Length: 317
Image (cartoon, rainbow, N blue to C red; front, side, top):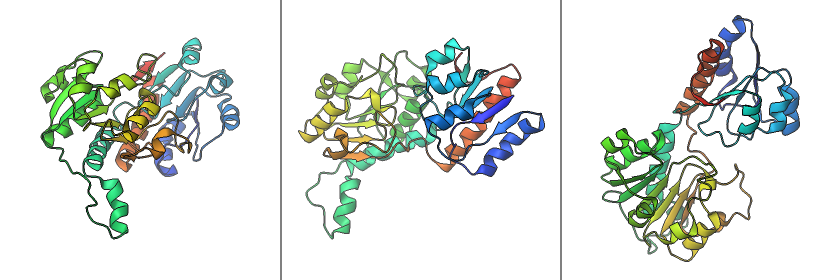
């Protein structure tokens, strides 16, 4: 089998090669990738591949079709909305993800963005550097707030656990109720009720046709004036223009945003880049030394299991 990396996984080459060595010893060909590739380079590299290793960059139909023998894709990421899944299904390609590798890292960032918004950490950094003082900002604690979790999968539940440790009340919304989420203390309500009742809304839902721009102007308008929106899931879940307008007009208090409709660098014209009271990070929720190391293990475990005819973490086939 020819196993081809199409993008880096964010760790040292030796970490990858140590994990790939057993496959090489078994006679499989392994092609390492240590730097980003453009579309043309991906197409050329894909030729002859039986399996791909990718992360979170777009994987188009052209690249998938260039690999006539492609049978499997091991995705070093949780979501798969950056992959042309229809083409994968047409070619009977098994797609396995790295679900769980970034649960802790993303949950911690969601809490970090909540604290950044509540305690004005972003503006105060510059104020302190300029020799300023409190400058009239209001301060709020996380303790006692009602946190609404949209999407109660693993990352949503981790965020809820952390919020509960801060003394928060928990509301939840998901397509189906989760027993573990209820044990944590999440009370399921409708999406409309969650947005209206929460002091902080934290998004952890996947991006699908049904959830695209789920957070609409109407939902944003239903939030408390003192409310905060956190998005560490997918940028496409939110109507960014409507959110920016609400922030600029003071109709909600703040937002903490880690994800956008496209991967960073974000175009200067994006409405949230110049919005008021927003803490922004360039899609780093998944990114920690611990999580990147863990995902390498999952990516290769996926390949090992697939080669044995017992695929794991299958999200499409």
